[in-house]
Length: 234
Length: 385
Ligand SMILES: Nc1ncnc2c1ncn2[C@@H]1O[C@H](COP(=O)(O)OP(=O)(O)OP(=O)(O)O)[C@@H](O)[C@H]1O
Ligand SMILES: [Mg+2]
Image 1 (cartoon, each protein chain N blue to C red):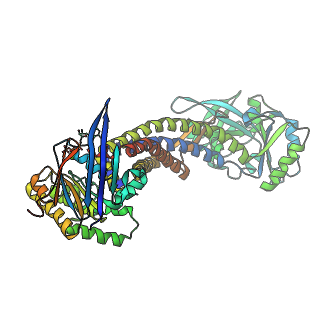
Image 2: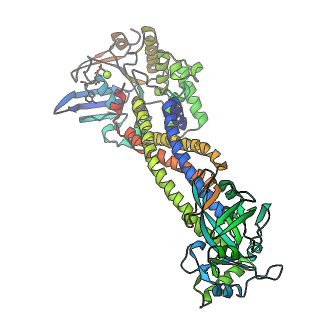
Protein backbone atom coordinates (compact mmCIF):
# COMPACT_ATOMS: atom_id res chain seq x y z
CA UNK A 1 0.00 0.00 0.00
CA UNK A 2 1.34 3.40 -1.00
CA UNK A 3 1.88 5.98 1.67
CA UNK A 4 -0.45 8.97 1.79
CA UNK A 5 1.29 12.16 0.72
CA UNK A 6 -1.63 14.52 1.19
CA UNK A 7 -4.27 14.28 3.90
CA UNK A 8 -6.87 17.04 4.10
CA UNK A 9 -9.51 16.85 6.82
CA UNK A 10 -12.33 19.36 6.73
CA UNK A 11 -10.11 22.18 5.59
CA UNK A 12 -11.64 25.63 5.30
CA UNK A 13 -10.16 28.88 4.13
CA UNK A 14 -11.79 32.28 4.56
CA UNK A 15 -10.57 35.60 3.30
CA UNK A 16 -11.69 38.66 5.12
CA UNK A 17 -12.67 41.34 2.70
CA UNK A 18 -13.75 44.57 4.36
CA UNK A 19 -16.60 43.65 6.69
CA UNK A 20 -17.64 40.21 5.53
CA UNK A 21 -15.82 36.95 5.23
CA UNK A 22 -15.31 35.28 1.91
CA UNK A 23 -15.56 31.51 2.31
CA UNK A 24 -13.20 30.28 -0.35
CA UNK A 25 -12.79 26.66 0.78
CA UNK A 26 -15.50 24.92 2.80
CA UNK A 27 -14.73 21.59 4.38
CA UNK A 28 -12.33 19.98 1.96
CA UNK A 29 -11.42 16.38 2.72
CA UNK A 30 -9.01 14.74 0.34
CA UNK A 31 -6.29 12.09 0.29
CA UNK A 32 -3.56 11.75 -2.29
CA UNK A 33 -1.39 8.67 -2.30
CA UNK A 34 2.24 8.59 -3.30
CA UNK A 35 2.59 8.12 -7.05
CA UNK A 36 -0.84 9.52 -7.80
CA UNK A 37 -1.48 12.10 -10.51
CA UNK A 38 -4.49 14.25 -9.67
CA UNK A 39 -6.12 16.84 -11.89
CA UNK A 40 -8.04 19.59 -10.10
CA UNK A 41 -10.75 21.32 -12.12
CA UNK A 42 -13.43 23.84 -11.43
CA UNK A 43 -14.79 27.20 -12.47
CA UNK A 44 -12.79 30.35 -12.05
CA UNK A 45 -12.84 31.55 -8.46
CA UNK A 46 -13.79 28.15 -7.08
CA UNK A 47 -10.67 28.07 -4.93
CA UNK A 48 -8.30 25.84 -6.89
CA UNK A 49 -5.25 28.03 -6.52
CA UNK A 50 -6.09 28.62 -2.89
CA UNK A 51 -6.11 24.88 -2.27
CA UNK A 52 -2.83 24.44 -4.07
CA UNK A 53 -1.24 27.25 -2.03
CA UNK A 54 -2.32 25.56 1.18
CA UNK A 55 -0.73 22.33 0.05
CA UNK A 56 2.45 24.18 -0.86
CA UNK A 57 2.65 25.75 2.56
CA UNK A 58 2.61 29.29 1.20
CA UNK A 59 -0.81 29.98 2.72
CA UNK A 60 -2.47 28.83 5.93
CA UNK A 61 -5.94 27.24 6.33
CA UNK A 62 -8.53 28.90 8.53
CA UNK A 63 -9.45 25.57 10.09
CA UNK A 64 -9.11 21.83 9.50
CA UNK A 65 -6.22 19.46 9.37
CA UNK A 66 -3.66 19.55 6.63
CA UNK A 67 -0.91 16.96 6.56
CA UNK A 68 1.48 17.02 3.64
CA UNK A 69 4.48 14.72 3.39
CA UNK A 70 3.86 13.61 6.94
CA UNK A 71 3.94 17.12 8.33
CA UNK A 72 1.16 19.14 9.91
CA UNK A 73 1.93 22.17 7.79
CA UNK A 74 0.02 24.79 9.77
CA UNK A 75 2.13 24.00 12.84
CA UNK A 76 5.35 25.24 11.26
CA UNK A 77 6.76 28.70 11.77
CA UNK A 78 7.97 30.86 8.88
CA UNK A 79 11.54 29.70 8.92
CA UNK A 80 10.82 25.97 9.37
CA UNK A 81 8.10 26.21 6.76
CA UNK A 82 10.52 27.64 4.22
CA UNK A 83 12.87 24.76 4.89
CA UNK A 84 10.01 22.28 4.57
CA UNK A 85 8.88 23.78 1.24
CA UNK A 86 12.39 23.59 -0.10
CA UNK A 87 12.61 19.92 0.80
CA UNK A 88 9.17 18.61 -0.12
CA UNK A 89 7.43 20.86 -2.63
CA UNK A 90 8.07 21.48 -6.30
CA UNK A 91 5.87 24.30 -7.58
CA UNK A 92 5.11 24.95 -11.25
CA UNK A 93 3.45 28.28 -12.02
CA UNK A 94 1.20 29.31 -14.88
CA UNK A 95 3.60 32.09 -15.90
CA UNK A 96 6.76 30.04 -15.25
CA UNK A 97 8.15 32.66 -12.83
CA UNK A 98 11.77 32.17 -13.82
CA UNK A 99 14.23 34.74 -12.47
CA UNK A 100 14.99 36.96 -15.48
CA UNK A 101 18.56 37.80 -14.49
CA UNK A 102 19.58 34.16 -14.08
CA UNK A 103 20.33 31.67 -16.86
CA UNK A 104 18.37 28.45 -17.28
CA UNK A 105 21.14 26.64 -15.45
CA UNK A 106 21.21 29.14 -12.60
CA UNK A 107 17.42 29.12 -12.29
CA UNK A 108 17.40 25.37 -11.88
CA UNK A 109 20.34 25.54 -9.48
CA UNK A 110 18.61 28.13 -7.30
CA UNK A 111 16.69 25.80 -4.94
CA UNK A 112 19.82 23.69 -4.51
CA UNK A 113 21.78 26.68 -3.21
CA UNK A 114 19.64 26.34 -0.08
CA UNK A 115 21.24 22.97 0.61
CA UNK A 116 24.66 22.02 1.76
CA UNK A 117 26.09 20.34 -1.29
CA UNK A 118 29.21 20.68 -3.37
CA UNK A 119 29.25 22.62 -6.58
CA UNK A 120 29.98 19.43 -8.50
CA UNK A 121 27.07 17.59 -6.91
CA UNK A 122 24.81 20.50 -7.75
CA UNK A 123 26.02 20.56 -11.33
CA UNK A 124 25.21 16.91 -11.76
CA UNK A 125 21.68 17.36 -10.45
CA UNK A 126 21.02 20.47 -12.53
CA UNK A 127 22.27 18.79 -15.69
CA UNK A 128 20.16 15.73 -15.02
CA UNK A 129 17.04 17.84 -14.41
CA UNK A 130 17.64 19.86 -17.56
CA UNK A 131 18.17 16.75 -19.66
CA UNK A 132 14.93 15.25 -18.32
CA UNK A 133 13.11 18.28 -19.72
CA UNK A 134 15.21 18.11 -22.90
CA UNK A 135 17.00 21.43 -22.46
CA UNK A 136 20.57 20.40 -21.71
CA UNK A 137 21.64 22.50 -24.72
CA UNK A 138 19.99 25.69 -23.41
CA UNK A 139 21.76 25.94 -20.07
CA UNK A 140 23.37 29.33 -20.68
CA UNK A 141 20.22 30.93 -22.09
CA UNK A 142 18.39 33.60 -20.17
CA UNK A 143 14.60 33.28 -19.82
CA UNK A 144 13.99 36.03 -22.39
CA UNK A 145 15.98 33.98 -24.92
CA UNK A 146 13.63 31.01 -24.52
CA UNK A 147 10.15 30.27 -25.88
CA UNK A 148 7.22 30.00 -23.46
CA UNK A 149 7.25 26.23 -23.69
CA UNK A 150 10.98 26.12 -23.03
CA UNK A 151 10.60 28.47 -20.10
CA UNK A 152 7.96 26.22 -18.58
CA UNK A 153 10.22 23.22 -19.05
CA UNK A 154 13.04 25.03 -17.25
CA UNK A 155 10.54 25.81 -14.49
CA UNK A 156 9.68 22.10 -14.31
CA UNK A 157 13.37 21.26 -14.09
CA UNK A 158 13.64 23.76 -11.23
CA UNK A 159 10.68 22.09 -9.52
CA UNK A 160 12.08 18.56 -9.77
CA UNK A 161 15.77 19.25 -9.17
CA UNK A 162 15.34 18.91 -5.41
CA UNK A 163 13.49 15.61 -5.88
CA UNK A 164 10.45 16.86 -3.94
CA UNK A 165 7.77 14.70 -2.36
CA UNK A 166 4.97 16.52 -4.11
CA UNK A 167 4.77 18.35 -7.42
CA UNK A 168 2.16 21.10 -7.57
CA UNK A 169 1.26 22.74 -10.87
CA UNK A 170 -1.17 25.66 -11.21
CA UNK A 171 -2.40 25.72 -14.81
CA UNK A 172 1.01 24.80 -16.19
CA UNK A 173 -0.26 24.88 -19.77
CA UNK A 174 -2.55 27.87 -19.31
CA UNK A 175 -0.20 30.26 -21.04
CA UNK A 176 1.06 27.93 -23.76
CA UNK A 177 -0.03 27.02 -27.28
CA UNK A 178 -1.36 23.51 -27.93
CA UNK A 179 1.96 22.09 -29.03
CA UNK A 180 4.09 23.43 -26.17
CA UNK A 181 1.29 22.59 -23.76
CA UNK A 182 1.30 19.04 -25.07
CA UNK A 183 5.04 18.78 -24.48
CA UNK A 184 4.63 19.96 -20.91
CA UNK A 185 1.85 17.44 -20.31
CA UNK A 186 3.99 14.67 -21.81
CA UNK A 187 6.72 15.66 -19.42
CA UNK A 188 4.45 15.60 -16.38
CA UNK A 189 3.10 12.20 -17.44
CA UNK A 190 6.64 10.93 -17.79
CA UNK A 191 7.61 12.27 -14.38
CA UNK A 192 4.64 10.47 -12.86
CA UNK A 193 5.17 7.19 -14.64
CA UNK A 194 8.93 6.85 -14.91
CA UNK A 195 9.97 8.67 -11.78
CA UNK A 196 6.87 7.90 -9.73
CA UNK A 197 6.34 11.58 -8.85
CA UNK A 198 3.16 12.50 -7.01
CA UNK A 199 1.50 15.31 -8.93
CA UNK A 200 -1.42 17.61 -8.29
CA UNK A 201 -2.28 19.80 -11.26
CA UNK A 202 -4.86 22.56 -11.56
CA UNK A 203 -6.23 22.90 -15.08
CA UNK A 204 -9.12 24.29 -17.08
CA UNK A 205 -8.37 22.05 -20.03
CA UNK A 206 -10.34 18.75 -20.09
CA UNK A 207 -7.72 17.24 -22.40
CA UNK A 208 -5.03 18.00 -19.86
CA UNK A 209 -7.15 16.63 -17.05
CA UNK A 210 -7.63 13.44 -19.01
CA UNK A 211 -3.90 12.76 -18.78
CA UNK A 212 -4.12 12.46 -14.99
CA UNK A 213 -4.96 9.29 -13.12
CA UNK A 214 -7.66 10.96 -11.10
CA UNK A 215 -9.92 13.95 -11.45
CA UNK A 216 -11.14 16.13 -8.59
CA UNK A 217 -13.70 18.89 -9.08
CA UNK A 218 -14.14 21.99 -6.98
CA UNK A 219 -17.18 24.22 -7.07
CA UNK A 220 -17.76 27.21 -4.81
CA UNK A 221 -15.20 25.95 -2.37
CA UNK A 222 -16.51 22.39 -2.08
CA UNK A 223 -15.35 19.14 -3.63
CA UNK A 224 -18.24 18.07 -5.81
CA UNK A 225 -16.96 14.87 -7.35
CA UNK A 226 -13.92 12.73 -7.26
CA UNK A 227 -13.66 10.36 -10.15
CA UNK A 228 -10.96 8.27 -11.67
CA UNK A 229 -9.41 10.09 -14.61
CA UNK A 230 -9.02 8.86 -18.16
CA UNK A 231 -5.72 7.29 -17.22
CA UNK A 232 -2.50 7.87 -19.08
CA UNK A 233 -2.65 9.07 -22.62
CA UNK A 234 -6.37 8.38 -22.96
CA UNK B 1 21.44 32.93 0.95
CA UNK B 2 20.35 34.19 -2.43
CA UNK B 3 23.34 34.07 -4.81
CA UNK B 4 25.15 37.38 -5.02
CA UNK B 5 25.04 37.37 -8.81
CA UNK B 6 21.29 37.77 -8.47
CA UNK B 7 21.97 40.98 -6.59
CA UNK B 8 24.39 42.67 -8.93
CA UNK B 9 22.74 41.49 -12.11
CA UNK B 10 19.51 43.08 -10.96
CA UNK B 11 21.32 46.35 -10.37
CA UNK B 12 22.81 46.12 -13.82
CA UNK B 13 19.45 45.11 -15.32
CA UNK B 14 17.94 48.41 -14.18
CA UNK B 15 21.10 50.39 -14.71
CA UNK B 16 19.30 53.57 -15.75
CA UNK B 17 17.73 54.19 -12.37
CA UNK B 18 20.66 52.63 -10.58
CA UNK B 19 23.09 54.99 -12.27
CA UNK B 20 21.02 58.05 -11.41
CA UNK B 21 21.10 57.05 -7.77
CA UNK B 22 24.76 56.22 -8.00
CA UNK B 23 25.47 59.66 -9.46
CA UNK B 24 23.44 61.51 -6.84
CA UNK B 25 25.19 59.73 -3.99
CA UNK B 26 28.49 60.11 -5.84
CA UNK B 27 28.21 63.89 -5.89
CA UNK B 28 27.51 63.99 -2.19
CA UNK B 29 30.69 62.00 -1.72
CA UNK B 30 32.56 64.42 -3.97
CA UNK B 31 31.54 67.40 -1.85
CA UNK B 32 32.36 65.57 1.35
CA UNK B 33 35.80 64.49 0.20
CA UNK B 34 36.35 68.02 -1.10
CA UNK B 35 35.76 69.54 2.31
CA UNK B 36 37.90 66.93 4.03
CA UNK B 37 40.63 67.61 1.49
CA UNK B 38 40.49 71.29 2.39
CA UNK B 39 40.87 70.45 6.04
CA UNK B 40 43.62 67.95 5.28
CA UNK B 41 45.54 70.46 3.18
CA UNK B 42 45.20 73.08 5.86
CA UNK B 43 46.50 70.76 8.52
CA UNK B 44 49.40 69.71 6.31
CA UNK B 45 50.32 73.36 5.72
CA UNK B 46 50.63 73.83 9.45
CA UNK B 47 52.19 70.48 10.21
CA UNK B 48 55.19 71.22 7.97
CA UNK B 49 56.00 74.25 10.04
CA UNK B 50 57.00 72.95 13.40
CA UNK B 51 60.37 71.84 14.71
CA UNK B 52 59.94 69.72 17.86
CA UNK B 53 63.18 71.01 19.36
CA UNK B 54 62.01 74.63 19.14
CA UNK B 55 60.04 76.04 22.05
CA UNK B 56 57.66 78.88 21.42
CA UNK B 57 56.80 81.13 24.34
CA UNK B 58 53.78 83.46 24.46
CA UNK B 59 51.96 85.36 27.13
CA UNK B 60 49.81 83.18 29.33
CA UNK B 61 46.24 82.72 28.12
CA UNK B 62 46.77 83.60 24.48
CA UNK B 63 45.98 81.28 21.58
CA UNK B 64 48.13 82.84 18.93
CA UNK B 65 51.28 84.90 18.57
CA UNK B 66 49.39 87.95 17.35
CA UNK B 67 47.33 88.09 20.54
CA UNK B 68 50.37 87.84 22.76
CA UNK B 69 52.51 90.67 24.03
CA UNK B 70 55.07 91.05 26.79
CA UNK B 71 57.94 93.32 27.62
CA UNK B 72 61.66 93.04 26.98
CA UNK B 73 62.56 91.91 30.51
CA UNK B 74 60.68 88.68 30.08
CA UNK B 75 62.35 88.12 26.73
CA UNK B 76 65.78 88.59 28.32
CA UNK B 77 64.97 86.11 31.07
CA UNK B 78 63.91 83.58 28.46
CA UNK B 79 66.98 83.82 26.27
CA UNK B 80 69.16 83.45 29.35
CA UNK B 81 67.55 80.13 30.31
CA UNK B 82 69.80 77.10 30.61
CA UNK B 83 69.12 74.64 27.82
CA UNK B 84 68.92 77.19 25.03
CA UNK B 85 71.31 76.26 22.24
CA UNK B 86 73.99 78.41 20.68
CA UNK B 87 74.31 79.10 16.98
CA UNK B 88 77.47 78.39 14.98
CA UNK B 89 78.51 82.00 15.60
CA UNK B 90 78.12 81.55 19.33
CA UNK B 91 74.96 83.62 19.65
CA UNK B 92 71.94 82.43 21.58
CA UNK B 93 69.75 80.33 19.27
CA UNK B 94 66.61 82.32 19.97
CA UNK B 95 64.42 84.82 18.23
CA UNK B 96 62.09 87.34 19.78
CA UNK B 97 59.39 88.15 17.31
CA UNK B 98 56.57 90.57 16.87
CA UNK B 99 53.54 89.68 14.85
CA UNK B 100 50.90 92.01 13.44
CA UNK B 101 48.14 91.63 10.93
CA UNK B 102 48.00 94.02 7.98
CA UNK B 103 45.39 94.43 5.30
CA UNK B 104 46.62 93.86 1.75
CA UNK B 105 44.89 93.94 -1.58
CA UNK B 106 44.85 90.74 -3.58
CA UNK B 107 45.47 90.69 -7.33
CA UNK B 108 41.73 90.44 -7.91
CA UNK B 109 41.09 93.61 -5.91
CA UNK B 110 39.67 91.94 -2.79
CA UNK B 111 41.29 92.49 0.57
CA UNK B 112 42.94 90.01 2.85
CA UNK B 113 44.77 89.93 6.16
CA UNK B 114 48.44 89.15 6.06
CA UNK B 115 50.66 88.24 8.95
CA UNK B 116 53.72 90.51 9.21
CA UNK B 117 56.48 89.10 11.36
CA UNK B 118 59.44 90.97 12.76
CA UNK B 119 62.26 88.53 13.52
CA UNK B 120 65.62 88.84 15.25
CA UNK B 121 68.74 87.55 13.50
CA UNK B 122 68.45 84.28 15.39
CA UNK B 123 65.13 83.67 13.60
CA UNK B 124 66.97 82.36 10.54
CA UNK B 125 69.26 80.14 12.54
CA UNK B 126 66.40 78.33 14.23
CA UNK B 127 64.56 77.84 10.92
CA UNK B 128 67.07 76.02 8.70
CA UNK B 129 64.38 75.28 6.12
CA UNK B 130 64.03 78.98 5.33
CA UNK B 131 65.16 79.52 1.78
CA UNK B 132 65.33 82.61 -0.42
CA UNK B 133 64.10 81.74 -3.91
CA UNK B 134 64.51 85.18 -5.39
CA UNK B 135 66.47 88.27 -4.29
CA UNK B 136 68.06 88.18 -0.84
CA UNK B 137 67.36 88.39 2.90
CA UNK B 138 66.43 91.74 4.45
CA UNK B 139 69.12 93.64 6.29
CA UNK B 140 68.34 95.27 9.66
CA UNK B 141 67.91 99.02 9.76
CA UNK B 142 67.17 99.49 6.07
CA UNK B 143 63.39 99.10 5.90
CA UNK B 144 63.50 95.87 3.94
CA UNK B 145 61.13 92.92 3.90
CA UNK B 146 60.91 89.46 2.33
CA UNK B 147 57.64 87.87 1.26
CA UNK B 148 56.49 84.24 1.21
CA UNK B 149 56.51 83.16 -2.42
CA UNK B 150 52.97 81.76 -2.64
CA UNK B 151 51.63 84.86 -0.88
CA UNK B 152 53.57 87.17 -3.19
CA UNK B 153 51.82 85.54 -6.14
CA UNK B 154 48.40 86.12 -4.63
CA UNK B 155 49.17 89.72 -3.72
CA UNK B 156 51.01 90.50 -6.92
CA UNK B 157 54.11 91.58 -5.00
CA UNK B 158 57.50 91.48 -6.68
CA UNK B 159 61.06 92.12 -5.63
CA UNK B 160 61.60 95.87 -5.73
CA UNK B 161 58.00 96.77 -4.86
CA UNK B 162 57.38 99.10 -1.94
CA UNK B 163 54.61 99.00 0.63
CA UNK B 164 53.64 101.08 3.62
CA UNK B 165 53.66 99.10 6.84
CA UNK B 166 52.75 101.21 9.85
CA UNK B 167 54.53 104.55 9.80
CA UNK B 168 57.26 103.58 7.36
CA UNK B 169 57.64 102.37 3.81
CA UNK B 170 59.28 98.98 3.25
CA UNK B 171 60.87 97.54 0.16
CA UNK B 172 60.53 93.89 -0.96
CA UNK B 173 64.05 92.53 -1.40
CA UNK B 174 63.35 88.80 -1.63
CA UNK B 175 60.88 85.95 -1.84
CA UNK B 176 61.15 82.92 0.39
CA UNK B 177 59.82 79.43 0.82
CA UNK B 178 60.31 76.34 2.91
CA UNK B 179 58.84 77.17 6.28
CA UNK B 180 55.33 75.76 6.15
CA UNK B 181 52.64 78.19 7.25
CA UNK B 182 55.24 80.99 7.30
CA UNK B 183 55.10 80.77 3.51
CA UNK B 184 52.05 83.02 3.74
CA UNK B 185 53.82 85.70 5.80
CA UNK B 186 55.88 88.82 5.32
CA UNK B 187 59.10 89.02 7.31
CA UNK B 188 61.18 92.01 8.29
CA UNK B 189 63.66 93.00 10.95
CA UNK B 190 62.29 93.00 14.51
CA UNK B 191 63.49 96.54 15.26
CA UNK B 192 62.44 98.06 11.92
CA UNK B 193 58.90 96.70 12.17
CA UNK B 194 58.67 97.41 15.89
CA UNK B 195 59.54 101.06 15.25
CA UNK B 196 57.08 101.38 12.46
CA UNK B 197 54.24 99.87 14.49
CA UNK B 198 55.29 101.66 17.72
CA UNK B 199 55.85 98.38 19.46
CA UNK B 200 59.52 98.69 20.28
CA UNK B 201 60.43 96.82 23.39
CA UNK B 202 57.49 94.44 23.17
CA UNK B 203 57.39 90.90 21.91
CA UNK B 204 54.64 88.64 20.63
CA UNK B 205 56.66 85.48 21.06
CA UNK B 206 60.10 84.16 21.74
CA UNK B 207 61.44 81.06 20.04
CA UNK B 208 64.09 79.08 21.86
CA UNK B 209 66.06 76.33 20.20
CA UNK B 210 66.88 73.32 22.38
CA UNK B 211 69.41 70.60 21.58
CA UNK B 212 66.74 67.97 20.98
CA UNK B 213 62.99 67.39 21.31
CA UNK B 214 63.64 65.89 24.75
CA UNK B 215 65.72 68.92 25.73
CA UNK B 216 62.85 71.10 24.47
CA UNK B 217 60.51 69.38 26.94
CA UNK B 218 62.96 70.09 29.77
CA UNK B 219 63.24 73.68 28.65
CA UNK B 220 59.45 74.03 28.77
CA UNK B 221 59.51 72.81 32.38
CA UNK B 222 62.22 75.32 33.22
CA UNK B 223 60.16 78.13 31.71
CA UNK B 224 57.07 77.07 33.60
CA UNK B 225 59.00 76.90 36.85
CA UNK B 226 60.20 80.51 36.49
CA UNK B 227 57.89 82.49 38.83
CA UNK B 228 58.73 85.89 37.35
CA UNK B 229 57.23 84.97 33.96
CA UNK B 230 53.55 85.02 33.05
CA UNK B 231 53.99 82.95 29.93
CA UNK B 232 53.12 79.66 28.37
CA UNK B 233 55.53 77.48 26.46
CA UNK B 234 54.86 74.85 23.79
CA UNK B 235 56.91 73.09 21.18
CA UNK B 236 56.39 74.46 17.68
CA UNK B 237 54.48 71.39 16.42
CA UNK B 238 52.14 71.67 19.40
CA UNK B 239 51.52 75.30 18.63
CA UNK B 240 50.73 74.72 14.95
CA UNK B 241 48.63 71.71 15.76
CA UNK B 242 46.56 74.03 17.93
CA UNK B 243 46.27 76.53 15.10
CA UNK B 244 45.26 73.98 12.51
CA UNK B 245 42.73 72.36 14.81
CA UNK B 246 40.84 75.59 15.04
CA UNK B 247 40.91 76.21 11.30
CA UNK B 248 40.56 72.71 9.93
CA UNK B 249 38.11 71.89 12.70
CA UNK B 250 35.75 74.48 11.28
CA UNK B 251 36.06 72.91 7.84
CA UNK B 252 35.40 69.48 9.25
CA UNK B 253 32.31 70.65 11.13
CA UNK B 254 31.04 72.50 8.07
CA UNK B 255 31.84 69.49 5.91
CA UNK B 256 30.03 67.09 8.18
CA UNK B 257 26.94 69.27 8.46
CA UNK B 258 26.85 69.68 4.69
CA UNK B 259 27.50 66.00 4.09
CA UNK B 260 24.81 64.87 6.51
CA UNK B 261 22.23 67.17 4.94
CA UNK B 262 23.10 66.03 1.43
CA UNK B 263 23.36 62.41 2.48
CA UNK B 264 19.83 62.55 3.87
CA UNK B 265 18.68 63.60 0.41
CA UNK B 266 20.74 60.84 -1.15
CA UNK B 267 19.19 58.33 1.25
CA UNK B 268 15.80 59.15 -0.21
CA UNK B 269 17.17 58.64 -3.70
CA UNK B 270 18.53 55.26 -2.70
CA UNK B 271 15.31 54.32 -0.92
CA UNK B 272 13.31 55.37 -3.96
CA UNK B 273 15.41 53.20 -6.23
CA UNK B 274 15.14 50.26 -3.89
CA UNK B 275 11.37 50.64 -3.49
CA UNK B 276 11.10 50.62 -7.27
CA UNK B 277 13.24 47.48 -7.39
CA UNK B 278 11.07 45.76 -4.81
CA UNK B 279 7.83 46.77 -6.52
CA UNK B 280 9.03 45.67 -9.95
CA UNK B 281 10.09 42.31 -8.59
CA UNK B 282 7.12 41.41 -6.38
CA UNK B 283 6.32 38.18 -8.20
CA UNK B 284 9.98 37.28 -8.25
CA UNK B 285 10.14 37.69 -4.49
CA UNK B 286 7.04 35.52 -4.15
CA UNK B 287 8.67 32.87 -6.31
CA UNK B 288 11.85 32.90 -4.26
CA UNK B 289 9.84 32.53 -1.09
CA UNK B 290 7.81 29.68 -2.61
CA UNK B 291 11.07 27.94 -3.54
CA UNK B 292 12.07 27.98 0.12
CA UNK B 293 14.04 31.19 0.61
CA UNK B 294 13.33 32.74 3.98
CA UNK B 295 12.17 36.26 4.67
CA UNK B 296 15.63 36.92 6.05
CA UNK B 297 17.31 35.92 2.79
CA UNK B 298 15.03 38.18 0.77
CA UNK B 299 15.68 41.07 3.11
CA UNK B 300 19.41 40.35 3.04
CA UNK B 301 19.47 40.27 -0.73
CA UNK B 302 17.74 43.63 -1.18
CA UNK B 303 19.76 45.13 1.63
CA UNK B 304 22.95 43.93 -0.01
CA UNK B 305 21.77 45.46 -3.26
CA UNK B 306 21.37 48.85 -1.61
CA UNK B 307 24.75 48.57 0.09
CA UNK B 308 26.38 47.57 -3.18
CA UNK B 309 24.80 50.60 -4.80
CA UNK B 310 26.18 52.76 -2.00
CA UNK B 311 29.69 51.34 -2.23
CA UNK B 312 29.73 51.75 -6.01
CA UNK B 313 28.52 55.34 -5.60
CA UNK B 314 31.25 55.93 -3.04
CA UNK B 315 33.86 54.67 -5.47
CA UNK B 316 32.40 56.86 -8.17
CA UNK B 317 32.47 59.93 -5.93
CA UNK B 318 36.03 59.19 -4.86
CA UNK B 319 37.07 58.99 -8.51
CA UNK B 320 35.41 62.34 -9.16
CA UNK B 321 37.28 63.77 -6.17
CA UNK B 322 40.75 62.62 -7.28
CA UNK B 323 41.51 65.70 -9.43
CA UNK B 324 40.93 67.92 -6.38
CA UNK B 325 44.34 66.88 -5.15
CA UNK B 326 46.20 69.33 -7.34
CA UNK B 327 44.13 72.41 -6.53
CA UNK B 328 45.87 75.15 -4.59
CA UNK B 329 43.83 77.62 -2.64
CA UNK B 330 43.93 80.04 0.23
CA UNK B 331 41.88 80.70 3.28
CA UNK B 332 41.80 82.60 6.49
CA UNK B 333 43.61 81.24 9.45
CA UNK B 334 40.68 81.27 11.85
CA UNK B 335 42.86 82.10 14.82
CA UNK B 336 44.90 84.89 13.36
CA UNK B 337 42.53 85.85 10.53
CA UNK B 338 45.46 86.03 8.20
CA UNK B 339 45.79 84.61 4.73
CA UNK B 340 47.32 81.17 4.36
CA UNK B 341 47.78 79.23 1.15
CA UNK B 342 47.70 75.47 0.86
CA UNK B 343 46.97 72.55 -1.44
CA UNK B 344 43.88 70.37 -1.20
CA UNK B 345 44.80 66.90 -0.03
CA UNK B 346 42.54 64.00 -0.90
CA UNK B 347 44.13 61.76 1.69
CA UNK B 348 43.28 58.05 1.86
CA UNK B 349 41.37 58.92 5.01
CA UNK B 350 39.21 61.45 3.15
CA UNK B 351 38.61 58.91 0.37
CA UNK B 352 37.71 56.22 2.83
CA UNK B 353 35.39 58.57 4.72
CA UNK B 354 33.61 59.45 1.47
CA UNK B 355 33.08 55.82 0.56
CA UNK B 356 31.94 55.13 4.09
CA UNK B 357 29.40 57.94 3.89
CA UNK B 358 28.05 56.50 0.63
CA UNK B 359 27.82 53.05 2.16
CA UNK B 360 25.86 54.42 5.11
CA UNK B 361 23.59 56.17 2.63
CA UNK B 362 22.97 52.86 0.88
CA UNK B 363 22.41 51.08 4.17
CA UNK B 364 19.88 53.63 5.44
CA UNK B 365 18.18 53.97 2.07
CA UNK B 366 17.92 50.20 1.66
CA UNK B 367 16.73 49.29 5.12
CA UNK B 368 13.02 50.05 4.79
CA UNK B 369 12.55 48.80 1.22
CA UNK B 370 14.38 45.56 2.09
CA UNK B 371 12.24 45.13 5.16
CA UNK B 372 9.12 45.84 3.11
CA UNK B 373 10.15 43.26 0.53
CA UNK B 374 10.25 40.56 3.15
CA UNK B 375 7.03 41.49 4.95
CA UNK B 376 4.45 40.76 2.26
CA UNK B 377 2.53 37.49 2.06
CA UNK B 378 3.69 35.03 -0.57
CA UNK B 379 0.22 34.63 -2.04
CA UNK B 380 -0.13 38.39 -2.46
CA UNK B 381 3.29 38.62 -4.07
CA UNK B 382 2.51 35.84 -6.53
CA UNK B 383 -0.71 37.56 -7.58
CA UNK B 384 1.21 40.63 -8.78
CA UNK B 385 1.34 41.11 -12.53
N1 LIG C 1 -5.41 36.93 -0.94
C1 LIG C 1 -6.74 36.99 -1.18
N2 LIG C 1 -7.48 37.90 -0.57
C2 LIG C 1 -8.80 37.97 -0.78
N3 LIG C 1 -9.46 37.13 -1.59
C3 LIG C 1 -8.76 36.18 -2.23
C4 LIG C 1 -7.37 36.06 -2.06
N4 LIG C 1 -6.94 35.03 -2.81
C5 LIG C 1 -8.04 34.54 -3.43
N5 LIG C 1 -9.12 35.23 -3.10
C6 LIG C 1 -10.47 34.96 -3.57
O1 LIG C 1 -10.73 33.59 -3.35
C7 LIG C 1 -11.48 33.06 -4.41
C8 LIG C 1 -10.78 31.87 -5.00
O2 LIG C 1 -9.58 32.29 -5.62
P1 LIG C 1 -8.61 31.27 -6.35
O3 LIG C 1 -7.49 32.03 -6.89
O4 LIG C 1 -8.29 30.15 -5.45
O5 LIG C 1 -9.52 30.75 -7.53
P2 LIG C 1 -9.18 29.77 -8.72
O6 LIG C 1 -10.09 28.64 -8.61
O7 LIG C 1 -7.73 29.49 -8.75
O8 LIG C 1 -9.57 30.66 -9.96
P3 LIG C 1 -8.88 30.74 -11.40
O9 LIG C 1 -9.33 29.56 -12.15
O10 LIG C 1 -9.41 32.01 -11.98
O11 LIG C 1 -7.41 30.77 -11.20
C9 LIG C 1 -11.68 34.18 -5.41
O12 LIG C 1 -12.97 34.73 -5.21
C10 LIG C 1 -10.64 35.16 -5.04
O13 LIG C 1 -11.05 36.47 -5.33
MG1 LIG D 1 -6.10 29.96 -9.99
